[in-house]
Length: 398
Image (cartoon, rainbow, N blue to C red; front, side):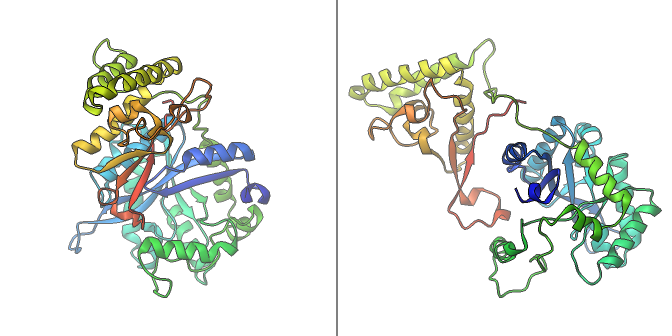
């Protein structure tokens, strides 16, 4: 809303190793009449020079999705970080990302923490140029040196250095200020949230804490005055147009579960539920449970949502198989189907919970299943103070 009021035409999101905000971004941008640019900031490992203390060094890069295929590539790279490369993506992984990187993704070199800025401050220009050449081999026509302005005394010198580095290597530049708050008045909140993420109190200095109020939305004219480079501003508009991605389809659809050959999702759901129902209910409880299950299965069949339940069950099955504590909550607790599938852990019949609060034939929106995952089995980088993290099973058409 602030960006719209200021006169911007597009808003981008590039969270650290996450596209969790993409759906909200697209939904709100559509309501505000703005274009949505979906990106992600990923840790990438670059080779260190000979005789360095470590063979590789991690720097963040920003990737923007041009297409839905590009969005898929971002998700695959995030998965690679979380499952295989928590210390950073090797360049080979980025290079081999199914061809989707070159055609469907744009790469920005990053802001204050990016390697051009950090190595420039260290006067290691040769290594900065080497890393740019490595990235250009992966993104031959989609690599941009990112220009930003932190309103610090040395900003003009830094901008001159970045433009000169790009010019020497014949790379384009793009005006892409780092924005983390709507207005300058949100600075104390941003600082407090940053300290919470870092696990420090507000009295402890840290280089990752915001230095001033410069990272607010501002105005197009204001940023143009701070970054008065015609090519960089034109490239910003070009990328906003190229990467305008409306992620949400016209309607949400059920994800495809894992099925046996020639088996429908409804058949698979019924087979599993009828097999597990005796394990959940004693003989004298089974008639009531069976009647409830049949009614729920009828509703599921009418709405064609069998795949939804099976996919949610795959999540909790995976957690259970790997010793991860997980439990569904919310309105899904009113479903005997969820209880029989092991998605939820409380018997809805024993607590007189209504299935219709979760799902009914008059519902026009897709239901969701919130699953709490034990804190000790989620990413340690989140530094969350909560005892569990909630995941929603979103069903988006591929």
